[in-house]
Length: 91
Image (cartoon, rainbow, N blue to C red; front, top):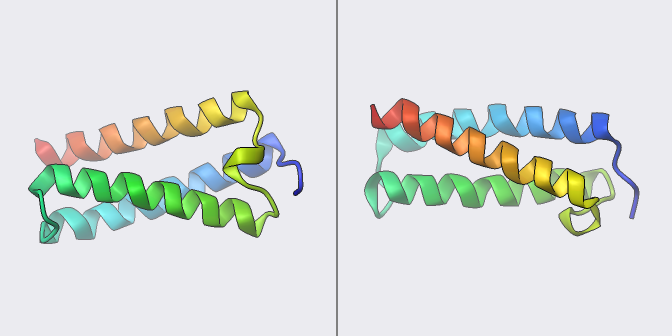
């Protein structure tokens, strides 16, 4: 497994934010997921985790191989993205 740089992680998280935001547009417009808004939130959180791991694998890395500081950065970014999206669509 390769060591991921801060710049690579930053690029991945930036790409992931755009990807999840675009996915949210379709998900909230359709709201066909079971559980309404909470179901969409759960779906987006799961998609974030899946897409993150896929992007890390493409860089020969994994969430399990990130330093603690980087893991915390990933978690904080996920929370901010999901909160921002939910606030936008719940208002």
